Image (cartoon, rainbow, N blue to C red; front, side):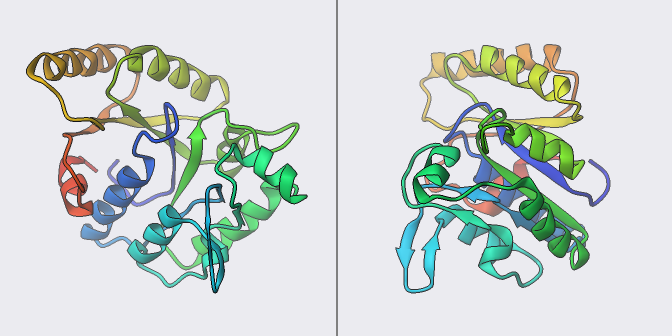
Length: 227
């Protein structure tokens, strides 16, 4: 990653640190002089506020952005129930439309050098009866960055996701190892072995390894990334 461009940030599962990594990527790119913005097109588990439903991750992305964005630009679809987005949309009587997300993306792209688009959950999360987040990344024409939570099962999840990304017609630009839990010495050694195994098997560079840290800061994550 030597230039300022857009990327789609996906993960091996939900709660693997996609937002933390996206924020770190934003700060690292901003340090190189890029005007960076981000989107979280679809979010569930949102809270009711006087301004309407709001998602905490999307608000963090909004605050980190180099340009001023309306909330509905970076998070056009937000739902209160903490369930899969397509289920939340069905319950709300809303149809998730890739075209609508593309319109918002193009608006943001016009006023920034780089737009990072953060997915919801994993790579193949459905948007509607026919399309998934993989289709969104493909339509946007974005290379993909994969966030891997270093825990039991991560090898299988990471390799299957990487294969699915390639099969979807997208380019896997890099991956990030994220240690989301405190580790004993033996667990730390196992995590290091898993990272080595993925380095040997994934056909893309590792962009960084993020050690576990309580209340990890954006600057800490940015310093762990090679972008």
